[in-house]
Amino acid sequence: MKNFIDLEFTENGPEFPLSLISIGIVREDGQEYYATVDFEEIPWDRVDNWLLENVIVHLDFSEGKSKDRIAKEIVNFVGPSPEFWGYYCDYDWVILCQLYGKMINLPESWPMFCMDLKQLTVEKGNPKLPDLPNKVEHCALWDAREIKYRYDWLMAEKQ
Image (cartoon, rainbow, N blue to C red; front, side, top):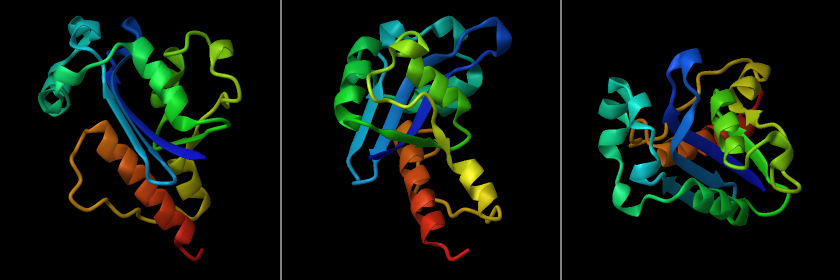
């Protein structure tokens, strides 16, 4: 089962580690998963103005979850032998994997890599990808929906 992922996270360069804020996953069958990290687990000292103005302002922390709970829910949601797709997703993949500890601790049958839609786009001649109509910017679930939308469009295009 293909799973299209996007994560919002802290990123402050080499001095600080990356830290999950929210995650959206859309399966190829259209089922969706979305979670925001519990308010108390956000490393607020690493949240910059851009995150505050573009991501945090849109989040509802009343339904925040622990990272441990999110990790367990993701395993149940993606099912056995998942395939993961992102868009410019190197950091997203690292942060997702960090939910499980070391790389060797990934759930059984999970790949140790994520497929990147940008790489597929380049392989197909780098066409301009369509935007998802009515998209909400910098929302992990909307971004995951857009990745699936673009993947479906790219796979349907005659190259």
